[in-house]
Image 1 (cartoon, rainbow, N blue to C red):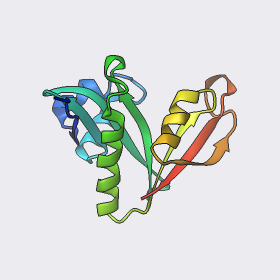
Image 2 (cartoon, rainbow, N blue to C red; image 1 turned 180 degrees about the vertical axis):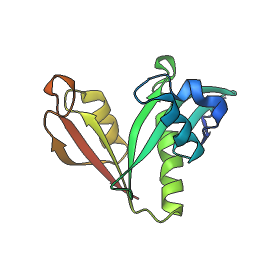
Image 3 (cartoon, rainbow, N blue to C red; image 1 turned 135 degrees about the vertical axis):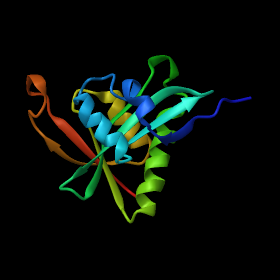
Image 4 (cartoon, rainbow, N blue to C red; image 1 turned 120 degrees about the vertical axis):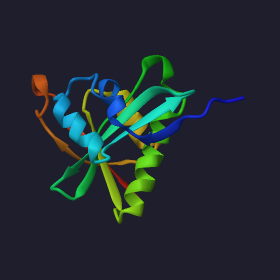
Length: 140
């Protein structure tokens, strides 16, 4: 029998797990949880991944981060979180979703294309070391 990925909105009980990357301050993660901008994928009651949403220009949904435990990658958790977010955004009137990846990250770029995103732009030199960021859009 295949294990299923359950996806849900994060709760404050997930704070340590969904903030473990320390990319943004804990208080910001807490606020994002309270505003239903963080989702968690779990298997057998244990978290295996999380994703955080942002809103560009206060209205455009953007995936800030999708992260899955290394030993749980390639088992559908990322796709399950994406489907959950797409359904939620569609239900709330959104017609597209944006995401991005550093230009030197071939695997995340391939994943975006595999799940239906299309490249839509580039910002050069935005990351540490002058690395650019490629942006993707998916129509919902």
